[in-house]
Image (tube, rainbow, N blue to C red; front, side, top):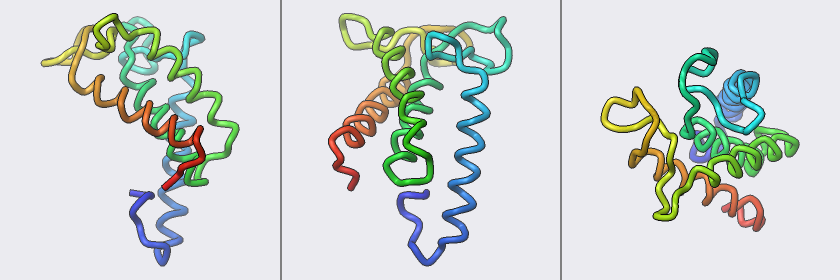
Length: 132
């Protein structure tokens, strides 16, 4: 939404950016040392999964590029990106994601593949400086 909201909506843009930062900060509080998160973020008894790391890395790369997150957040996204890459098997499937169709156990899903592509695209775009 922040990407497409017209500039005349500056107050709304500021509100949404602050809300997104608060959401990212809340998740980062529960990040594991390996860069991933538990399926239920605040419940370590649940399985470790890959999707949230990929989604957050995407959001952070986009936020840093657009200026609604400080550049210091990029290191968090880089850690998540590296952790997600470790979960990619020899066929390119992201393992350890909430598995379709019920998303109640680790495995693979088309959503995890999409999140990976989004994360990689946003990370590459930020690294290249091509923020359009």
